[in-house]
Length: 240
Image 1 (cartoon, rainbow, N blue to C red):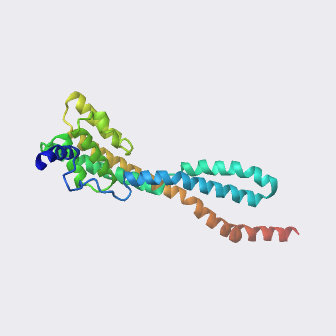
Image 2: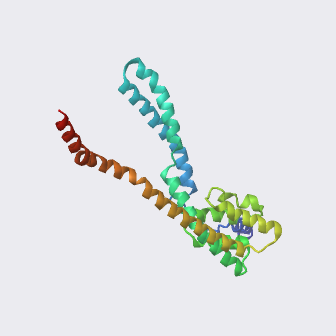
Image 3: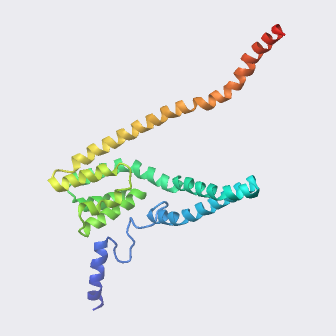
């Protein structure tokens, strides 16, 4: 009776991808995972409010008097809005890591599908092979597909990953037309790597241009003192 009573529970756990007594390979909380982002999202507004309030108080103290009291509130509101626009380091690191792992995930998906595995099992295998925030999202996609979710609903967890909209579009085209998905995933992985290489080259060129300004600010005083000041002093000496 005990064994028979546990069968529905065991079946439910199997459908959800969690064996009895064992935590799934993709379920442990990794550093920077969705749970950590949710916690950071709850803490961040409070921290921003405190920082904005302290900034308003600092403005009131520096300005002083009734002008400081008048300027303090607008300064606090402006500082609050500016701080909310800054991307938290944890979110930025997570986004960059997901974008970096996406080409490899596409290649692995293509390889597993060419081996004959169905889409849901391929995604689950790739999620177990990868490590990081993208693996968590892929595990959610695999669970939704195994539970009977539609393509748009199942692939929704990848919406926040940069470049994943192209992967989702390829999956939806394959689901609607019945075309093979492995070849599209391979081409997508190559395109993502090419885009990343182009972005890195553009960033390197932009850094070379931006570094000219601080170098100019460093050399400008020396140029003025060594080149212009002696000429000006000599001219003024001749004139006077």
